[in-house]
Each structure stands twice: as C-alpha cells, then as structure tokens.
Image (cartoon, rainbow, N blue to C red; front, side, top):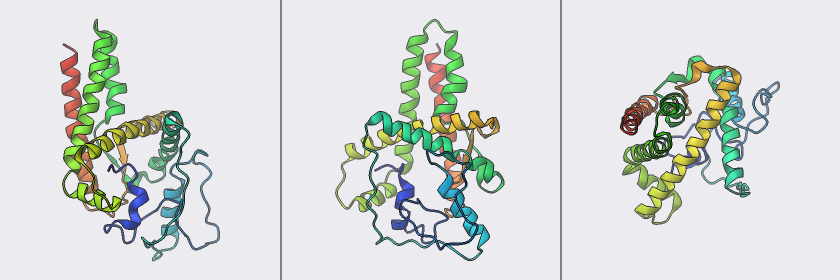
Length: 246
C-alpha cells in the first residue's frame, strides 16, 4: 500500500505512458554504440539505471521508453532477513545520491530537512546538553516518526489509496494500509540515511535538504507538492523538538 516501490509499477500507472526511466530488472533498450552503465556509481547499485536512461534519451532525441503492462519478470526478492534488507536499501541510496551531482541543474531542487537530516543536525545536538537525554531521545524520535507517517497518510489517502488497491487486485483493510505506510516510512528513513551518508562521503554538503526529481518533470507539480509536504513535516518536527526539550 505504500509508494516505496513506486518505480516498479510505472508500466501499470496511467501517468507514465512514456516514463523517463525504468527499473532495469524489467526493461529493454535498443543497443546503441558507446552507451554503457557509468562505473562511477556504487557497485551495490543505486542510480546507475536512472543515469543510463537519462543519458540515452539525451543522446538519442526522439527515442522514448514505452510502458508494457503485460510484461512480467520473476525477480528474486531480498529475503535474507531484516538486516540485509535494510542494508540493501542503505547501499542503494548511497549510490543514487551521485545523481544529485550529475543532474544538478536539471533535476535537483531545494526542500526542507527530512526526518534523518533533522534528527542528525538539529535534534541530536539539542539533546546532548540536556539533563533528560534518554527521555528526549526516545520520545523525540518516536514523536517525529509519528508525524512523518501521519503526514504521508493524510497526503496519500483517498484516490491514491484506491489506485494502490486496484494494483493489488484485492480488498485492503485500513489497518493493513496504515501498517504498510508505517513500514514504508521506516525503510524510507533507511534510504535517507544511506543518501545522507553518500553526500557526506562525497563531500557534497550542499546536497543536504536538496531533492532529486525522480519523476524527471513528467508529473506536473510533483516538486511543489513534495516541498509542501516536507515543509509541513519539518514544522511538526520542530514542534516535537521544542516539546521534548522542556
């Protein structure tokens, strides 16, 4: 029920008849000389498929991807346990952070600090000098996570919920949907930890609080809507920090 794996469903989404890129687990490209994956991306994966698709489109104007909803590929799920799954997401985001540098002018925009950035650069320093460090740390982290999940649920409910249920082709209860969003937000936090680590590792501090347009301009107002959502989350994060600090 979450949008964590949105990119895997592009072919079945009416908004993406001609997607800018697709997951390389199920995609076909016409062989073109001199076009190859960029080896500067992390070997653990993340970003190289998007980079390849965008460069391919640029080099061959008029060549566009077309979705094929009937195509099916059996792709093994990462089933080695929770830790390995988290590690996969972390490494994936560490790699795709390189896209911020490669497509800075076209697809990168400024937003508000997300959960991970707020926790590391605002909340954590604030609690270091507190006499109630343990209480502030636990309740503050939980409070911010609750706000993070609540805003996403509020934003994506209704029409988006029906779209997700139609893809699953079965009835989905409200508790199931809520649990899916809670789990998705947890994994998104793992992703953002990896992305922040990648930015710091590369020395690209300016990319903190900046976001990549994964829709590549194909979804109208997507950047504006995302910034509004992150703004609301950040204001609630500050409210939680202020509350637990007193």
